[in-house]
Amino acid sequence: MFIQVCGAAREVTGSCYVVEVGDTRFLVDCGMHQGGEKEFKQNFDAFAFDPHEVDFVVLTHAHIDHSGLLPRLVKQGFSGSIYATPATCDLVEIMLLDSAYIQEMEAEWQTRKARRAGRREVDPLYNQDDARKTIPKLKPVDYGKSRELAPGVTAFFHDAGHILGSAFLELRLEEKGEKVKVLFSGDLGQPDQPIIRDPEIIEQTDYLVMESTYGDRLHSHNGEPVKELAEILKEAKRSGGNVVIPAFAVGRTQELLYFLREILDQSGLDMHVYVDSPLASRATEIFRRHREVFDDMAWRLVGEPGGIFDFPQLHYTSSAEESKELNEKKGVVIISASGMADAGRIRHHLKHNLWRPESHIVIAGFQARGTLGRRLLEGADSVHLFGEEIAVKAHVHDLTGLSAHADQGQLLAWAGHFAPPRLTILTHGEPESALTLGKLLEERLHFNVMVPEKYDIIELGKK
Image (tube, rainbow, N blue to C red; front, side, top):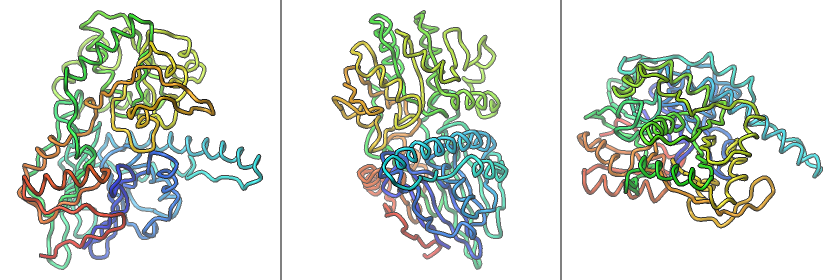
């Protein structure tokens, strides 16, 4: 028995693990690398395994850095099932189709540039047909129910409290009479997030594969992020500036709507909110369908007039024309994807607002190295968008305390419920984050920790 780390090793994106038990070989996650050009190019690298020989995939959640290479896997010969929670299956369907469309548009743009330079055409990473072939392979598994996926492989999905449908995965593996339990954390959420439940608690595992995204820092709660967001809205309304928020279409957008509904209701502020992301609109409909995983507060709000995702000041845009019309508005909130500002409509809104001193840019989630969002957080004086240099005069606010990821203290608290595993494998974090968290786990909880390199193999079951 072994695990091979094929992604998210000393980096935050590209989650992918090969697990082999006897004659069975399967993947946990198959995610896309995100960030700058260097990171994205990794998505075209050959898989470290033969897709024809992968029996099935187990998916922790729908975010593209965990699911985004599934169509490429299918394109290259994978024919098995993909197991995930029901909400994740629904979200993955719309996200993969959206991702495929983006791959096609990007390849078309690159091809036009290549032709002008006398170079060959550029093929997309995968296309919408590949995504459509992937969707029927999704097989829903409810939280807490055991599922035998193959001889010697039984899986349980536990609520990770990160986004709708997110799970940490408990695997019970057996080979030649030897039994081990392996737990993949996926992405762990902050306790007390709106809408979804807190991460579940588990107390025993032999091997723990754990994320470390915020392993070297605590979320800032000075003044509390929601109160800070309320003050930003009031100032923007007073000055006539816009509040532009890059937000992931799944999870972050819906939670922001929850907070904005609360702020506008309690303050009486008359400020319009625009969700400019067709994907976010479709994802919000899926949130409405999966109330079974809401927390108690969300259940109470479901019965109120307007519900959670509809209030008088809220508008959803769909067409490109509606999106362009937002460029003429003042004193409004614009939420748009992508969450790291490295693609999508958000870049157009930043182009029209970054140079305006009265505008506000709110960064509300993790920003990977190489992304526009990261450069803004680090204080860039100007950025390049669509071939233009844009001065950064707007106020840039770090509200990553609103992140859907657990911070260092919350990761340590969750891990503290375990009796020390035989080995804890830290992934899904930049090197300083993973190494810092590893040191704390060793010192405070007496864990045996490793921070693997990409393609490292960890043998299981050896005493």
